Length: 146
Ligand code: SF4
Ligand code: SF4
Image (cartoon, rainbow, N blue to C red; front, side):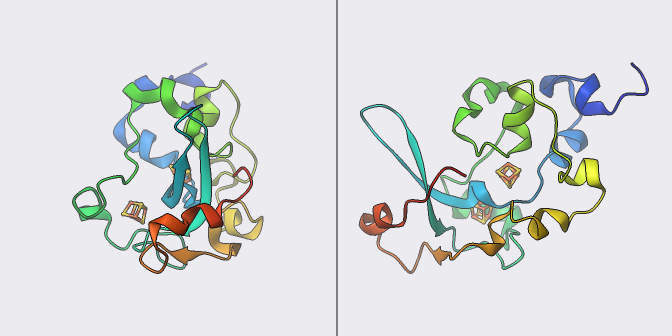
């Protein structure tokens, strides 16, 4: 048990801050703008992306992101039960659902670039920045499940 990797040995709530942060694979999918159906609560992803995302799926305003973008995603262990809306490839959702991390995940592969090479990240997508498209038009940019 002790020689198991931490994501198999610990629950999401038991992880240290460093372990928790290392789960993020840098895919950038949670920085895509989302639309919620008010009737059934379904969440639809769009290819409209936060204006602060860089070409390599990083945040150019990481330190100030919550001040600049009020709806910037902030994942916390106490919210695990609400992770259903996250992309199906997101490590936080994967572990919350009791699944194992995939082979392309940086913690498994040891290669942070692999996620781009296998098209799991948004780097291959035809994205538009959210300051280039009126919010009323975001519905025209809805994409299939991410
Ligand atoms: S969707 Fe999950 S793994 Fe991808 S960038 Fe967001 S938090 Fe990280
Ligand atoms: S501000 Fe938030 S949503 Fe925007 S790129 Fe940074 S982390 Fe993503």
